[in-house]
Length: 68
Image (tube, rainbow, N blue to C red; front, side, top):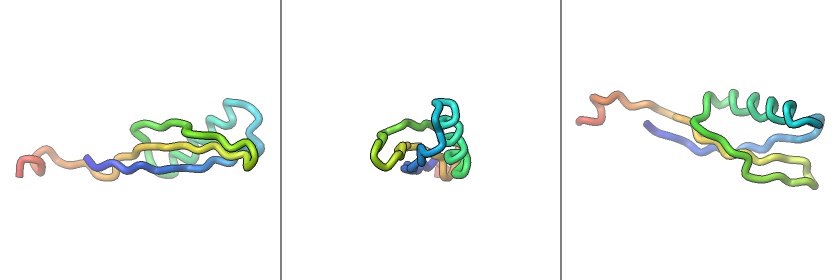
């Protein structure tokens, strides 16, 4: 299994509640697939951005390929 770390910037404008910000993060993550894990790594109050790091599976290996 290969993984990739993706760093995202989510604009906080128009997201005044935790639930709408969470939905905006989920929507952006879904554009890249289903993440194994993600975390909010930072917030910039001046630019109104939330920074998210996420790990995605890029390729799955067949167990037989691992034996070769």
